[in-house]
Structure formats: C-alpha cells, structure tokens
Length: 457
Ligand code: NAD
Ligand code: UGA
Image 1: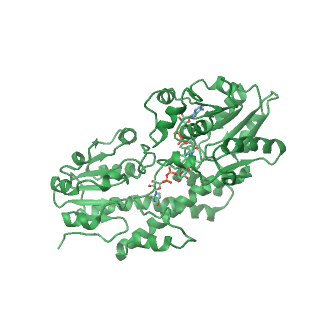
Image 2: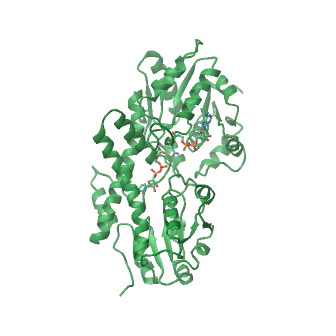
Image 3: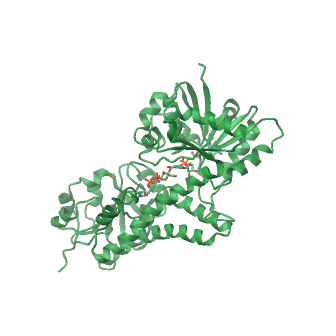
C-alpha cells in the first residue's frame, strides 16, 4: 500500500507508544513505525498484552496495528526507509560523572543521533520528542552535520505534554501542540511538515510555533510550574495540620480566583512520576551552569518540599503510632505514582515503603495495576505484595493510602476495620476517604492537611 507519509519513532515507551498510536489512528493515510532497542517491549507491542497500561490505548493500537502502525527492532533499516523521525528515547537523570544526580543523561539520545547519521541515505526531519535540556538541538545538529554525506537534516523540537493515565485524551484534545524550529527557510519548511501532521485532528490555533530554544525550554518550565503548584499546596498542608485549617477548603478558596485556577492544587503525599523531579533537577543544573544560582535555588526548593512531604507522611505514622513501627503490619494502598497507570517511577510509595522497612515494620503493598513494576524497585526489601486490598489489610495495624485509585474510595471500610488490629489507624495521603465516616467506624484518621481525628482520651 502507498502511504502519504512514512513516520518513524525511535523509542517505544510511555511517550513514543501512545503518541504514535494517536498519529496512526488520526491519520490512516500515513504509515507509522515504532522501533526500540528493547526487543521484549517490541514483542509486547506486537502481542495482545501491551507493555504499558494506559486507558484507551489498547483499542487504538488494535485498530491500527498491522494496517498503518508497526513495531520493529530493526532500527537501522527503518531509519533508511523513513524521512520523518521522532526521537522519544528516555532522558533520565545522570547517575555518574559530571552532573551526577542533576543533569539529564543524554547517552541514549546521542546514540540515536549517531545511528541516524550512520544510516541515513536521504534527507530527514528529526523531531525531538524526548524532554531535553535547552540547547540540545544544537548538539544534535552538530552530530548530524559531522557526517560526510550530502544528506540534509532539519531538527525540530516538539515536546510532549501528555500526562500518564489521561494520555489518550491529552493526545486527542491537547491544550496545545508546540513546535520549535530554526527560523531559516529549511527550518520553516520542516516545521510546516509537522504542522500538517497534527492538523489532521488538532485545531490550527492550538498548534503553536516558536523558536527552537523557546520550545525546548517551555517543556522544562511547564513541568516546573506544575510541580511547583503541588509543592506549594503541600507546603500549605503542613501548616493546615498544625493550625486545624483544612487544606481542601484553603485550596478551594484560593483556586476559585480565576487568576490562580483550581487545577493541580490537590495536596498529596508528594508528586512522583518519571519527569517532574528529573526535569526540575535538570533545570536547576542548567541555571547553575550559567551562574544563575538564585533561580537554581528557587526551583530546587520545589524538590525539597516534595521530599519533605514524603518524610512527613512517615513521621506522622511513627508519631501517632506511639513512636515505634517495629513489628507493626502496615498496608500501603497504591504503588503507582498516580491513579490509572502501572508506572511506579519515582512513586512516593517507593520511598515510603523503604522508610517503613527501615523502621522494621512489616510492609504489605497492594495495587490494581502496578505491583509488577513496583517489585522491581524494591528487590532487596522484605515486602509482601497482595492484589486484594481486603487480604492486604487483614490483621494490619495501619493503612496508608498512597495512590488515589477509585477502588480505594469505595471499599467496605467497616469490614476492613473489623479485620485489623486495634487501635486501627488510617493515613490518607490523597484525601480520598470520608474521614468522619471512617472515624465513626472506629479508625484513628490522619489525612494530609486536615485536622486529625483520634479516639484518644
Ligand atoms: P520510556 O523509558 O518509557 O521509553 C523510552 C524508550 O526508549 C525505551 O523503551 C528504551 O528502550 C528506548 N530506547 C533507549 N535508547 C534507545 C535507542 N538508542 N534506540 C532505540 N530505542 C531506545 O520513557 P518515556 O516515559 O516514554 O519518556 C521518553 C521521553 O519523553 C523522556 O525524555 C521523558 O522525559 C519524556 N516525556 C515523558 C512523559 C511521560 O509521561 N512518561 C511525558 C512527556 C515527556
Ligand atoms: C506530568 C505533566 O502533567 C505532563 O504535562 C508532562 O508531559 C509529564 O509530566 C512529563 O513530562 O512526563 P505525569 O507525571 O504523567 O505528567 O502526571 P501528573 O498528572 O502531572 O502527576 C504528577 C504527580 O503529581 C503525580 O504523582 C500526581 O499524583 C501528583 N499531583 C498532581 C498531586 O500530588 N497533586 C495535584 O494536584 C496534581
């Protein structure tokens, strides 16, 4: 079959998979191919058991797979065949050498660039889909230009703003699609090619273009602003607890100001996910590398408050459970970093479970989707895993709610209470339970940013 465009994406993970599935779905006239070095992942994409869980993804992949959506490990030959190439490889925090613990590790990105140069026989548009430090396009261009061939490369920045759990809706109805390019004739021509792809389903006024550095930087700043709101409300939650104010009421009153807005003001046990922390650390590193120490300190504080919030959750358990958790059974409801995903990267559940084990507690973790991924993070920790929340909570001294899965809102907490050791404690890290109801059942109830409800005399 003849396709109007052939599109390749290198990196078939949480971003590459859903974004390319959406392009294939919305543009049946294009052929979309995903490649990855991880052959197990590609095998899973080619099977009925997709490698990632994302609501709505399954049916879209089923519709397109084998028609105009393909998955392969044959990276070199696909680079040869495709002239529009998205790069969506991972860019984690560097854990070695200069910038360790702060800078983005660009080894996967760079390797991809070199592979493209080595294989390309015709001109290509290379699109940065991964989140990268500002000025990465320059690095990419320098690698691409070092080739002896006459092949022309145009580099675009097209950062992805999807959130996990809502990725398919975010992709179908994005607030905006951002495309950064060089302002040369060739740059603008390449940019128009990409605009044409998105214009198949995204209204033109939501496709915005900018210079390439603004585009790269906007991605880091969008994540920094989102994370900053969570840290702001979490900092407020600590003050609410000691003053007996209620963080939900404060967030509601503050968020109704249309200049502030109500989204991302949900106090929590802390933000997780693969990107907020890494992207802010990267932003801090970039600021410092330009000698901008005050802006660096400012953004670093967002991360510090997030760690403080996770620590506070464990301290609250220790303090309220009579200053020792040794030998106590503590059940964590939720391992995913947010609801509706199986992703556990940087999940607060990881640091909390580790801390509880260090306190010699007997930790049981339950989650409807994420236990397999979670276990991999905690191989050396003696943690028990249980799919059924009722069994997990049986004979526990305390429950900690870490992920806001819907099922935890509607469990039979009377039944759970009866099966637990008394006094029974519940620590709601997501403010999803009816505190008064659980208090009436008999629980001692602690919730983020809320007055505690205890049965102590
Ligand atoms: P991921 O780890 O799920 O996927 C990346 C994939 O790239 C992996 O499957 C890996 O095997 C593959 N890969 C690495 N090197 C490769 C190479 N040389 N050749 C071929 N494949 C290679 O990561 P992700 O969550 O999809 O994130 C990818 C990028 O998108 C990151 O820069 C991230 O910051 C950004 N991002 C992520 C999200 C999100 O919600 N996860 C949202 C927006 C942006
Ligand atoms: C986030 C951004 O929302 C996306 O726009 C971005 O593309 C993505 O990072 C990325 O670059 O990877 P994601 O991490 O998938 O998406 O999920 P979010 O919904 O942003 O949640 C992040 C964390 O903040 C979660 O742990 C969530 O529970 C927490 N959160 C969020 C709160 O604690 N309170 C809130 O009010 C909102």
